[in-house]
Length: 339
Image (tube, rainbow, N blue to C red):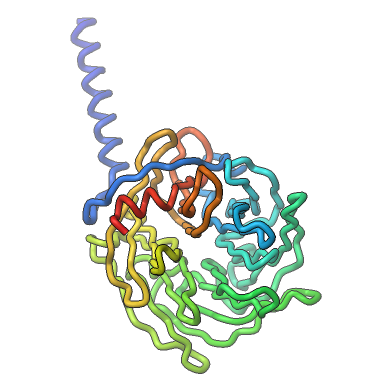
């Protein structure tokens, strides 16, 4: 009887284990991605046992382009600063900040502390110390602030931000940092359903509608001309569409998107948004990435570990530890995709 009971318990445990694996596996798988592995990872965010890590940005030292820092959100608590070895070197409490981007030494994050009134939380980065100083909150209209990205601009130029309200409302405007921060809306557009990820390519804005796909928005007076350029098709993109990023490589600009539904990333060639391929970050010296929200990518020589650029992805499942961010060599991704 003991042997039979043990066998039954073992079979039950095996069945439960297999059921758990099936439950955690993607329900839909898109086109097979090429496999790469992470070359580093950050220390976990401070909020444990929660969906907390969300969005990363990369600050590049204007005096030394080979030096960079990572600014990333713990959307339950505030902002972390990491070095490229993944060490957590600064933190500032900011409550519910969701997406983040940097322009020079200015950090801007979508502030969700009031779900009825959107705001931009604005900070200054002291990279030498390092430290983050809060400059204040800029009111940004009705709704819950969700996605955010900044337009790349020359030093001294106005900071242009895109704020994505959770219901899909897109507001693009300038961020003022003299005194109390301000946000002056230049144009606005409504995407049909919940949206978050965004990235600028010049004046063109790409926005990820989570269950719909990637929209291309071109400003047109007080609104924008909108075109769906990469729909969720369960081939290239599997819902939810999350973080977006661009990177320049060998004279070509690419748009990257988190295909969260099957733990992969889609790559498109700009400006035509032509599909190039997909990749996934598999387990190696560091863990695989799963259920990625925010991503970032930047070209450049950041030393032997990242000689040709960095791809950075939020990892929604970091095992027993709190969520974190994985760093991948861009040249590894480019080689795997044949770029």
